[in-house]
Image (cartoon, rainbow, N blue to C red):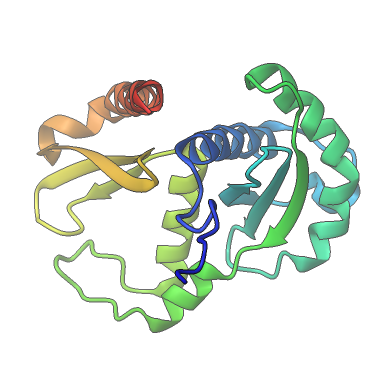
Length: 207
């Protein structure tokens, strides 16, 4: 007799992924801009690397990192203390009947990947150290997009932003000669993020 498969064995649903990314984006902005009165969080530069939703969307596992790669574990109790405030800020920004509980966890995936990575120099501007690459990735997570300025090909600048569809991650990239692109990066990044948001909304409606 063929064993019955769990209905969740295929992984998170498109709705779980979409809600998770919405909450990740909101939390990233809150942690970046909020002046916390808690002394442990007042000067911490935190980034939200990933959010995973439970199937009923009532619980969110929030994976956190500290800029610079320092251990974020000592800050987890402080994040738990401010969780009610963060939930109150999330509530009006998402279309859910119940605002999910937040459980903060240290993100070890990036450190594991960086430890195994071999850095190859393509140009004089290629990032050569793991610390510099970590900071670059953290900034990209905070802003929602990543800039490659002549790091892979001399004279070429790219801006990339991710979006999810059918439980998979995709990336939209804009590329142009650096000499003409540098001054237009803020405008291009804003338009790119808007395109990715519309793509996620359109694909979510198609499910």
